[in-house]
Image (cartoon, rainbow, N blue to C red):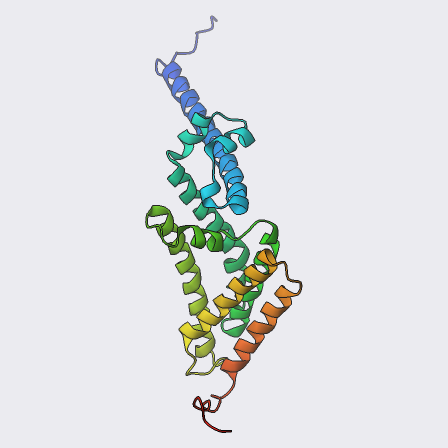
Length: 236
């Protein structure tokens, strides 16, 4: 009995070519994403030490072993690179500070966790810098997409803190008449003072003072309203 050859699917060669092309496209996309991530990692390090305005396509090309045009191709402009760095910084900030903290009990435990993790991150950044703070100095009076992106990220974080304060009030952990925005202002001010004293002035114990400051703020809003201060010039 003679063997009959199997029928040949005329579409098979074309299908194999399509499969190979798709596989190559996936590999190319993956490689492109890896390259972009490597550039972004180097850019984030550079911006942390030198500020967003210190970002240099040439320096990034040297660090990553790429050409300047190769680095440029992944972002399109220096401005887009700066915005990408801000977004990456914000993503990491959320992963390290926000998401772990929101797993804590609603109310004061969550608010305290947000502050404690924020302080911890600032402590880690003493040798580099906080892009939220350094970026605000660089772009406070320079309107444009970079400033808008930076301000949006900072507002997102402040909104998270404000929600935590409101939840603390709703949970009965803080007084019902707590001025949410005032408390937010005071807590945020502690971080700015910590960054200034610890990073710029290199004053020992700044972290402990920030934690004590937070405890005092919380204690104030746990207590009854203090007596009205004496008017200026009133005899005691």
